[in-house]
Every structure is written in structure tokens, then in C-alpha cells.
Length: 438
Image: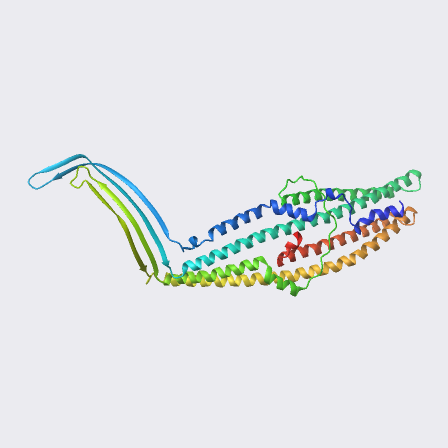
């Protein structure tokens, strides 16, 4: 095999693979499809709508209640009366009918500021639903990006295994030709075939794994698993980060931290809501009543009453078995627990961010190292192949050079994938995943 042919086989590690753009599913397109189809995002959007529907002054208790009632009763009764002097009287089928209606107004004018607290809680619940939607969107983006680059990673491995298998096939062909013309020996041919079959098996396994991981991306994009597509196999290397910058972004932008802070604020409001029970309650009541009762056979054949009524009432709980104090204490304990959970969350995220920054920066350095390693391993493999064709080295030495080149390729793309995976998780922690869709 010519030197130029070998260079062509090895070049894909250092140069992007060129393909028809129409056949390639870009990362941006994958994110767009995923955000449109994601089941979790659709559910989160519905939850946002529910929270906004609930966030009204009526739900908080600001507005009055107005009820309208109407009913009609008809009675047909048999009556019997006994009087002094053994007199008696009876009516059979004595009929009465009643028509009644009312409009009733009830309005809590003051409840110890509880209605204001409930409205503030509803505002926070709406903010939390927005954060839940943001979390769903960012998790979907992170999953899509990671799976997309995982496909690129495995595509590169697939190409490496394919090239390794191609070289082993060529080596087997040379061994068989030498054996046929009597300048080789059977052991050399057998060893070449063993290596070729091992490379073929690894190539087939990688091919199957690639099909499965593409099906996984289709699942994330809410598509059928057999939808065919190609990806851009270039895995970009992100820039290095500083832990202090990431810590600051986590504190200011992480949606889980923001959600926990809102939850802690809800707990503080629940303490105030429990304290509101100590205050008196002031209610306004109003009504307009109408009733009409008819007794055609009675002395009063028709009775009709109608007119408005209005009143105001106040109530205060003087003692209820110390339950108000119990509610206040429990609300304070819950608030303390949520604050502790918030502090734990922030510390855990900072610790995770510190580890990820280390992984990212080390992987970036490894990429630079492994790029040079691949170049050296490629030159070594090319030289070994030429010497093998001339009979200057053994099969074992050739195989060793091939394995070294494959190992260097694998370490390079692994470092690229590790750096990208760390960058994705860092962006998830800092809430910066929107950069993938700008």
C-alpha cells in the first residue's frame, strides 16, 4: 500500500469528515426538534398555565362571594285536629306551596393579613413554575447535546475500527499471497487472520452500538427509533474555566438554587400565615330574600316577604388548645429545614462545579497532548507498514504499531468527549445552556 493511501486512511482523526450537508442533522436542528417535541417540556408548560390561572386575587381571598338560591316546594297533606269539647276537624289533601329565592353576599374584609400572604405565595408559585419549565428546557438541551456528541464520539471510534480492520484485511491478503508463493509460512497467515477477525468483531459491535445510541437520540427528540440521520463528527474543545467564575454563576443563575430560595421564602410566608390566626376576622354579609307562601284553603291564603339585609361580624379565637402556637412552631421548623436544604444544595453544587472545572481543564490539556500523540503514532504506523511490506519487521511489530495508533486515536477523542461532557454539565449548573440555541 502506498504512503499516500495510508495517510488518507489516518487523516480523519485530524481533519473533519466532509459529508453532504443535507444528510447531516446539526446540533442546532436537533435541539430545535427536541424542544418542540419534548414531553417533559410540554407538561412543564401546562404546569405554568395552571400556576398562572391560580395566581389571582380571587384565589387569594380578596374578592367577595355571591350566591343565588331559588327553590319551590309544594305540599299535599292530610290533616286532623281535635279541640276541647270533643270537636275535631280534618282536611284531606291540604295544599300549600312556597317559592323562595335569595341573593347572598359574603366578604371577608380582614383576616389578619392572610389574604395578602396567600397572594404573595401565589406569585412565588408562578415563579417556581417558570423555573420548573426552565429546568425542563435546560435538561432537555443538555441531554440532546450530550447524546449528539456521544454519537460523534462513537462515529469516530467506528471509523477508527473500520480503518484498523481495513489494514488487517490488507495484511491478511499479503500473508496469504506470501504463503501461496512459498515465501511466507502458515503461522504468519493464521496470526493475520486471527487479528483480522478480532478487528472485524470489534467493528461489528461498534456498528451495533452506534445504531442503538442513534435510536436513543431519536427517543430524546421524541421521534421514531428508526429515523436515519448523520451527525457532524467534529467534537469541539471548549474553553477553560475558573472555579471562582463558575461558583458566582451557580449562586446567581442556577435554577435549582433559585427555586430553593423561593421555597425558603414560601416557608417564611407560611409562618406569617400561621400568625394571622391570632388576629380577629372581620366579615361583611348581605342578602336580598324573597319568599312567597300560599295556602289556598287556609285563613291566610298568601304570605309574601322580600327585602334586603346587611350585617357585619367580627370573630377572634381566644383559645383553641394552643394549636395556633403549634402551627407557628412547626412552620418555623419547616422554614429552618428548607434553609438548611438550600445551604446543602449550594455547597453540593459548588463542590460539583469545582470537580467539573478540574475535569474540563485537564481534558483540554489532554487534547493538546493527544493531538501530538496521534501525529507521532500515525508516523510510526506509516513507517511500520512500509517496513512490513519490505519484510523488515514482523507481524507482531506491525500489529503493535497499529494498536498504538488506535490507542492514541481513542485517547484523543475520549479527551475531546470528556471535555465536552464537563462543559455541558458546567453550563447546566450555571444556567448557560441557552448558548447552544443562540
